[in-house]
Length: 205
Image 1: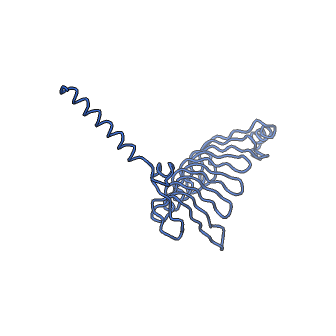
Image 2: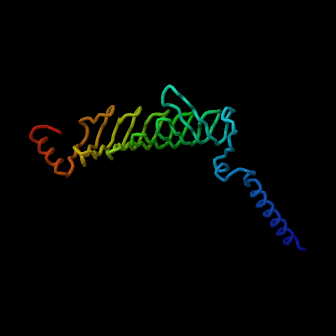
Image 3: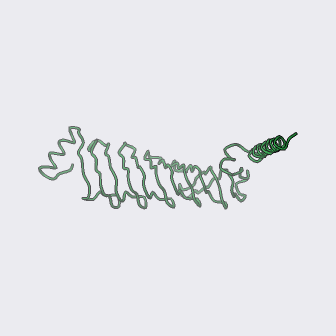
């Protein structure tokens, strides 16, 4: 066997060992799902009173005094909901998304029991940054939030009976629109009547 042939054999053996090692390292442990492997966590203890750390599981918080209790299903770090998960609140609200130290933090979706929804950025449990808030009647705000309030630049689209189709685009402060924006009346009959009344008398309706 020539030196060149011996080198080819050595390279072939090396590649075979490398591939085998890769599959052995990345093989899921017994009882571990692909999901758990992908997020780098193992199942939490079955007893929820135990310490949860770097694991995936669920825990229920009960509070008979009010409706702040919940069931959380997701990842835990240092015995706190942390990573990604879902909160099922006792009052019927529902949150799914990023969680940091027990609070919605990052990007998520919050559905209220009365029909409103918010999807967007959270900081320490508050709507903060860019998001979209949709009321139960279909009225929608999309734009900047600060401490749970419309604050900054945004767009408000009415869908109720009185102002259906009306749109405001511009600045908001503490949930209220300012004069630094543009109000567009809807193309409905009501909208056009209100537009004329506003032009002549300054009445918005």
